[in-house]
Image 1: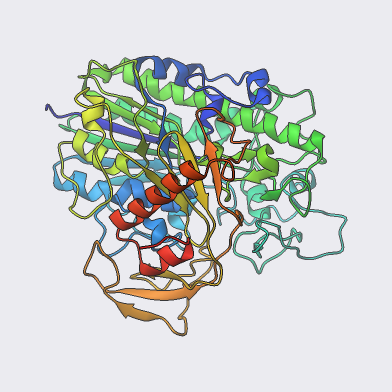
Image 2: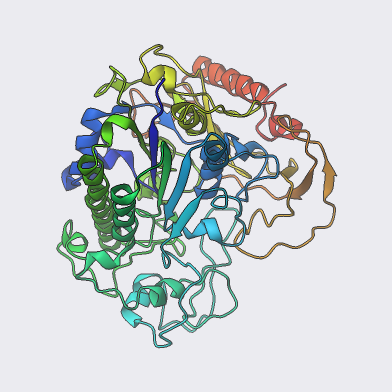
Length: 535
């Protein structure tokens, strides 16, 4: 295989059902008609993967899968790369490939993360998204935007907790716009974007990241082979859009302080996450506006590939870490239960040397497989012991099947398995000990705060894929599923009908599939007990 450049693009929180290449089971999405002309055109020439699932959720766990090929959620939560990990960038540079990272994904640079950018030959970080710890001025923050991002300026309460799950609350959600104690106050965003012009989309994040990527493609010469990694944090909340996107899918005033752009995660019918029909409709419109904005500026990257005649020597991979619930199933956010709207993600691959271009792949694939795939495209080898299985044989049309199962979920919560036709959700048993395994002492359930020593932590060679000793620390778990759920995703793509009671034989098959998956992964002993699976 000849040497190819690789352009690897992730678009955070991108719902596949808003793209022309995929269908939506939800009427409001179809009726809204979200415009994504650039991704639609790309899908026509690329290979579209129709049965692609996330693995470790959410943001940083997904990136560790892509970067290292380790499906981490059976062993640990949100955290850094490990001492025994070998990243994509390290593998590529050791293979003589120039590597570059362009991102506005500030989680790569904050408490609870490290090792995700250091191995690149160069990286650029566009500051200010979400609650990036960047600007501290102006002191008099925009009161309208403060309200839109979740502050109740008329309340006497200085702090509240959000009903993220029925079992746990997030202490970082505060109502004091001058709070200086918490590490992720939402006022950070308001001050970060204080100088942005709502009428000038070039001030906003997708425009900056994709413009810099286009500039890099237009000016990078002389190198034999490169890997360009674009990690775009949009479509992630807050859903604060410039014009024309803010008004594209709504007749509301996008700057009305009563209309939220940063919803709290949880049930839409109660608690801090509760939303009126008007508020939910507006949030949907701003999410859709961000999707179109991202698509528009991604077009600049495609233009650069055109202008530099790079399509014939570059493989392009575009995906997302997860989707986002916008009122479906009564939830808003990306938490468990892990419905397909969150866990079934878009994946497009362009390869200049395949006859499969323009086709749709039905084979079951997993996010962790992108690690080995990208290394394969670079003619580099992934490490033994990873959980990644290269998609290159499918891309080249050599095989049509890939996986018998895909596992996905959040560490500390419920687990999911799919065979591509059915999805099965197993609740975690909260009375069974839960452990986090890492070479670092972690704040696994509060990853954005400084770490400190923990009483009772043990060390040892506990992991099946490395002999490196790690810390084992016990934490509480949290379940939202409560009882097993089974969905026929062919007949019921919206997952509205739990058929676990009327389909005992299929339920038993999926339980066996989950058992097989956990045994194949050599999951910790306690994981089998946590999900009621015999070993």
